[in-house]
Image (cartoon, rainbow, N blue to C red):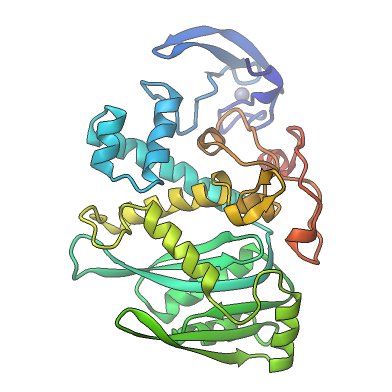
Length: 365
Ligand SMILES: [Zn+2]
C-alpha cells in the first residue's frame, strides 16, 4: 500500500498541485477489474482522484501490467499486429495505448534528459522510409559515449537544418566537460553545425568508411577541428576510445534496428506515417536510456542503465515510473551528488534517495 505522503493533488489549478502529502486524505475505495483501489481527496480543492489520475494509465479497463507488457513488446522489435495477438486486444486498442505510452515517454525524456556530462559524442544517421519506399526519411541519433546515453534524436531529411537541430538539443541539455571529443561519419553538414554551436572548444573528427560488396575496405580519419596533439590528449583521457571512431553510435544503430519493428531492414511492418515513427522512437529511447541495463556498464554485480551512468537516476526504472510521471504520485528522484568532472566511470556510485529530490522541487516550482 502506498503511503499517503507520496500522493499529491492532481488538479492543475490547486495550490497543492504536485506537492506530495499536503492536505491529502483517504476517501474510500473503488473496484476495478484488477482489484480494489484507494481513492484520495484533496482538502484544499475537494477534488478526488486515484493514483492513476492524470497518468498514462488513466481510464484503463485492464491492469497496469498489461499496458506495461505492450510497451515492452514494442521495444523488443515485436510488430503492432503481433503485439495485439500476444496481448489479446484489438489492434486499435494497442495503437491507442501506444500513443499514450509514447506521449508519457516523450514528456519523461524532456523532463529527465538534462544536465548530463558531455565528454565524448558520436553522431550518425539511420535510413528508413514511411508509407512507401519513395518517402525516405533519416533518423539522426547522438550518443554520449562515456555513459552510453542516447542523448539526441531527430527525424527528418538529411539536411543541415536537422543536423544542427539535433546537435543543438544535445548541447543545450547537457553540460560540456573540458574539451569534448566529437566524431561523426563524413556527412558534410556536421562540421559547419559543430563550428557554429561549439566553436573551437572541442575536437571534431570524421571517420569515413569505404565499402565494397558490403565490406569495409578502407577507413579514413579526418581531423576537422582541433590539433593532432589535442586529439591524442583526448584519446589518452578517454576510457572508451583508443582512436577516432564511430563504433559506439554504430552499435546503438544496431540496437535501434533490432529493437524496433519499424526500423528493421527488409521489414514489411514499416511505419505508415511520420508521427507514428516519431512516437515510437521516443518510447524506444526512453526504454534504452532508463529501463534497459547496458552490458557495457557492468560494475561487479550491478549492471547500470545509461541514465544511471550519466547521473540522471539512481536505479533502473520500470515502465510504471515513466507512465505515472506527471500524475498524483511522483515516485522518482535524481541522485543528489553532482558527478565528478574526471569522467562518469570514476564518479561515486549513485545512491537511492527519498522522495524529496529535484524532481519534486521542479514540480513544486
Ligand atoms: Zn487540490
